Length: 244
Ligand code: SAH
Image (tube, rainbow, N blue to C red):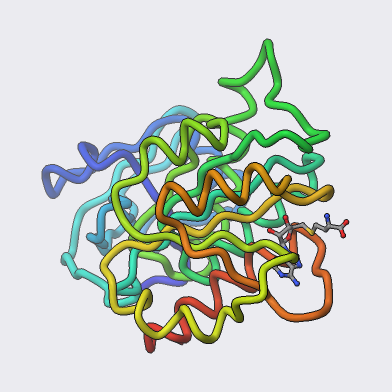
């Protein structure tokens, strides 16, 4: 396994002669200053890792030869989807980074009544690619085999409407301790986790979530900042699932 890991489009790994584009050429040649003959790990983001030897590096492309394929065993069995209410940019990115390291499988930026941060109107595509880049860097660093996805922002209502499996919503006014809900939920294949914005969920939102089948839980008597609550909840869910 090489120390240098890169998620690449899955189709680039279809044959043993691999050509990677300008973006990778920049990272490999300019940023890391790797050389012909060096080894790199290329990940398809879906669980496969290809060990490869660099054959050539130019400004526009890196060519490499595949040496072997593995399927690293670093992914949790429990597929966590973190619905995190939007936060000011740097703190939202922090959640993406820490959530990825911990093992979240998918992030859904959530728009709720008390969100002060709003999805960027004009440049949502740019924002999403920035979010995806944060996740990719964290996933490479933390040896993820699956590249977590950041979806487009969704309203709480839409998110609840689209939910097909079990889920938890963290609400500071709940009297149900997380500990009483986790053992059963952590045995599932997929678990949705909902965390509100700095101002919290409204009681109407908590009621709507309950009506949609979510379990409303407390994270204890201390109030965590929203960007703390997401990663803490993810870590505790994976711990209960026996994955930490
Ligand atoms: N509105 C609250 C704080 C919200 S904290 C207030 O100002 O008092 C931001 C989010 O983190 C909440 O929406 C909730 O999802 C989660 N959270 C933080 N601490 C929590 C706790 N002790 N129990 C449950 N959820 C918590």
